[in-house]
Image (cartoon, one colour):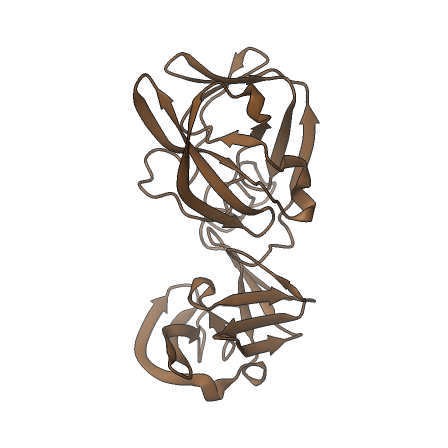
Length: 281
């Protein structure tokens, strides 16, 4: 549903049937996982029957049966929003002791048209609560999509990274990371990066790989901010890229085996003023 996925806003392939227009697809399914939501050390939702809603252009969202939510911790809100695919959403705030999360919860009392069966189910803004657990593991950034795959493969292809003709990195021992709906990424050993690195305060979180930290590089006296990231302590499924460095291909020039690559279009292209702190590949 995201990136160049088949039901994303910019599908990368072709169907042999007429699919929904980009941005119109919605799909909901039961999740086999136990899902918990925590605010101020209080479990406010705990469900083994949550529904996972997939919507074009968005990360998945968990919807909970009201019986699995501490409704005694929810307070009415006057906020109402409209979704042309689902209907009018009403909101609730969360109060745990002195902690108040304004409009942290929404639900659709009724849905419209061909909307999926989510009427009356309760959803939480991911980044307004403190913690999410899938089974007993904390999950970062957004729910893990069961249709999202990350393949990390060693590659002997010659990878060269340049900026305005200046060589920033060159390696024939990269790890190639292929992630559903996102551009391929090339993770390079630090010793193969020639650019002058400058530490950044920026961090981002990925539910599939972990916590990323960033580097800026200096080129011809100019600094390219946050153009490199690394996972120093990745999740177990992504240990192959631990400590390696990856460039935003959207902001540099990449050659593979001497062939210049077209810069990919993604949410992290230069035209985007503030890259979202979600998964980037």
